[in-house]
Image (cartoon, rainbow, N blue to C red):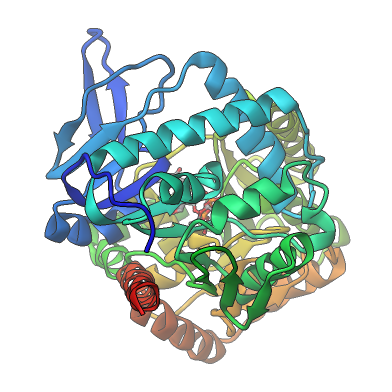
Length: 481
Ligand code: GDG
């Protein structure tokens, strides 16, 4: 059944994501080179990529660059160009100022602009075209994240021979929120072009299925969505919680130089009894202000003393050209300045605040130095920081305070779970974390480490790709029956 395959490429396996796993960097001499960004996704997919001789399709991170495909560290790279206007409309606009706030429970108000949508459609088609031109007959194409939700349908229309997977890294919102989107039907139709649509949490997959029922009237049964038509298809919408390369974090944490650096960090802060840590992209979904408020109040109440407790907050720069992010930065930095002004002493700062990105080694040293890790996101698909903290704590000490609005809270049941909106609850959890006896820390951390070490990112990608191959095989059987 279906149209004959029009194959024009050679790759058997393709990954599509907005950003490539490599960054183009321009040195002081004006020479440009490629820097491998060692993200979890790359680490997870590298073995699959090599085995299948796969290619990665994505944007190189700079506008108006028209580059030929090339190879980087054994990975085939197929760059997709974006103009400066498309970066504004498709990326900063529709992706980061419409979809991102909408999918994160409208924590910030989403902006709806028709010209942003037009650009989103156009750029999604460009990504689809690049994949169509590069894929061998019957290839497996795995599309990543909310920037590319229309690509699965575009791929299927041109290339019914392909096996198409999609993974959504951010939440999928409840229908009452999702239904605000003027293009709500086009988006779910775009996603339904895939054989398997992966989500972080079971709740996200449920929200998606409900949107499909409400908007298209299709029948859904647990993880199966029945798409009617000339060639009826079963689409799987299911949770595949993403993870990290757990062992590589533990290995870094065991390095003597990194442990020495953790000691140095502690010394540098004046050897407080307790170091609390927050690590986030500077994003309004992360609940940084809520965390600061709770800490500030604990200092004001005298339940915590600045001589004993220091909070380190790494807020890595993010989306700095989007208005809501500029405003957030001002708010956070005002609050940090106020708390430090009110409570810091000459020898002890209250909040050691860093608007920087750091190398992975420094992040691990910070995790090692932190007695208490604070993850207070208001909404977060997964939150890898929580898992990274757990992976580095090989001596089983340390306490994770974790928002129940993160995907990670489904798995890390032995964290101290909080509702970040409940400031009194957050304050109590912080006090409980600081006072927690070693035995209890161990018990909790051991259980969480077991979870994170046995469910790493390789496990995630294998699970997804196995489900994808299975779904495609049973669909083919049904097509030829
Ligand atoms: C999206 C979803 C989902 C941060 N600052 C530095 C740095 N990081 C690293 C962390 C972590 C990653 O960035 C952040 O991942 P998160 O999961 O915490 O959050 P998002 O960036 O919002 O990611 C999220 C994720 O996709 C995966 O599906 O979990 O819910 O929103 O790895 O360590 N790394 C370095 N320096 C920094 O300054 N080296």
